[in-house]
Length: 377
Image 1: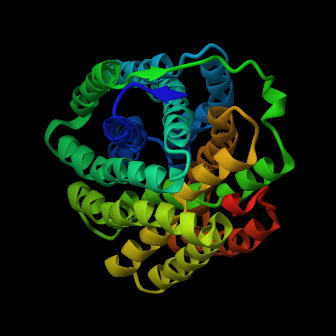
Image 2: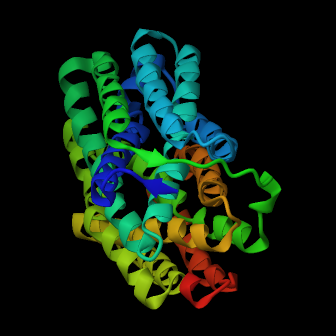
């Protein structure tokens, strides 16, 4: 794939799209206290509002990526995804029941299934020798999106209530226009079958990568509700929850660059182990400092898995990333429902503690993956 845009202008455009995509992915979570009261639902039902779009995104990642590479439609796929996300939140404003709102989350899932394989695949192909660095810098956009989602949505909900969904539908159209103008790439179709993408090592990486959703989606989805249960108002609860996500702005570019130097497996193992340690400390004492460092080590490995996936799969880089990210999204789809059920039955701390064992197991399991070359380590 050749870039007709300056590579760093391309990186800026893709990172800006990452910001908007990941911002969209967390806008339902801050609204859970409002939706729970409005629809008279429990935490399990609220978790389904989060799980459904993640599940659909997981299912659609690979088919969308395979289509975009087979027919050379990567740019079109990126733009279409953001238009669908915009439409989904626009509809969410007009739907007035719990079950009709589930329909809007279906469209959110379709939109979220479009960005990551295409965005990360484009960067991996353009920055061949520095893909960890490029994907890590791109991760700043995602981290900013995660950070501003609870803050911005908390503010909007506090001032506009359900009208907030109408307001947040606007940025999707804006970013679609920016991508249309700034992203210029020469695309060539890749006709290899999808089954050529699959490998034992790639599937193994996907299993290891599932650890992250239980932190980034499971815990994050209920952190505002946790702080709210401690007596914080909805805006303060979301401000505190955003501390975990702030760390990603530093951690993602650092993690990508470190993995280029010391290896992908090493970086993932360290990050998993340490985020488990800081989660344990947060459970013992809910300090925002511990929350920040848990978020830091969680974010450290995110760009690394994309770079690793680009290296250990087949020729279709987007599809390689889609397989792994699709498995991540499967974890994202079940994590909120599982955590919500655990909270309903055992409380917040016991539910959060469930993730410590998952993190430690992931830090060990990553060593089973055998890189194909020294570069892939």
